[in-house]
Amino acid sequence: DIPSFTLNTGAKIPSVGMGCWQGQQGAGRDNELVSALLTAIKVGYRHLDTAQFYANEEEVGQAVRESGVPRSEFFVTTKMSPAAVKDPVKEIDSSLSKLNIDYIDLWLMHWPQGLTSTDMSSAQAFGLENQKDLGPTFNETWAKMEDIFLNTHRGKVKAIGISNFSPKNLEILLRTAKVVPAVNQIEAHPYLPDQELVDLCKEKGIHVTAYSPLGQYNSPIHKDSDLEQIAKAHDTTTANVALSWAVQRGTSVAPKSTNEKRMKQNITLLKLSDAEMKTIDAISKDPKRSTRLNVSAYNKQTKRVIGWTLEELG
Ligand code: A2P
Image (cartoon, rainbow, N blue to C red; front, side, top):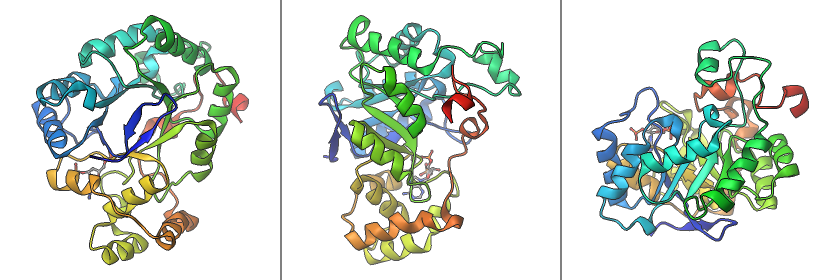
């Protein structure tokens, strides 16, 4: 069994999950993804992390149903797209119907951000083409998610949370939140430890899940000299060391892999020494090794946040 962390709902989240974002180069919505997920389930993955935006909830649900593993052993996360901030009820009904697995373990607000005024084609897609229409604040959207969780869809959504929330975003959300988010899912790895945010979440009882915990594609993490040295001492890979560090500092991880060997490597984690943990903690103090590695243009280009102007957010 994969070790797990306990959420503020009492539910357990596996320390290693399978990221289902297929990106620009991935398998997409087809049988290739279902068979990759069935392999992941076979080697021991129980947390599957998808989103409306990934357009593959059907395939994730299909893999869960076809696996022969009881539903209760799974932890399935999905996320509400920014296109849905005005109508979360429609969104959750859509996710439940696409996944078709009775209930969702964790439902996240995918981003706090809105869209740039220059990015009109996606602005239109997100129904926010009128620049004066800032849309609801994320506080208002969260209140609707709370109502879904506590009342209208009770039992169908076992926990609610957020993703890509900065410390400032979180502080603003908590001013009005009645339900403390169970999880904040953020990009985190040795080149972006975001320790301050991780500590703040811990203080508030919010579990952190790291996405892109290895960076994406040709990530420099695989060739990092400090990680290489530690990997050599344990006769393992830099990827394995980076994931072990992440879990040991209290964050769960959702690395994506479609390769069985790497899937196995990513769930068989090590115990690192305090000195090794400190070495990895210090990597991002080197400015050359302090960077985002996830390509999400969305996070980089966004000029405003749903319902809030950047001035208000500081
Ligand atoms: P692959 O699927 O071929 O294993 P993301 O940032 O979206 O989680 O992507 C992670 C990337 O790292 C993927 O391109 C994945 O490719 C690769 N990867 C996953 N696990 C490992 C590993 N243990 N060693 C090297 N590369 C890995």
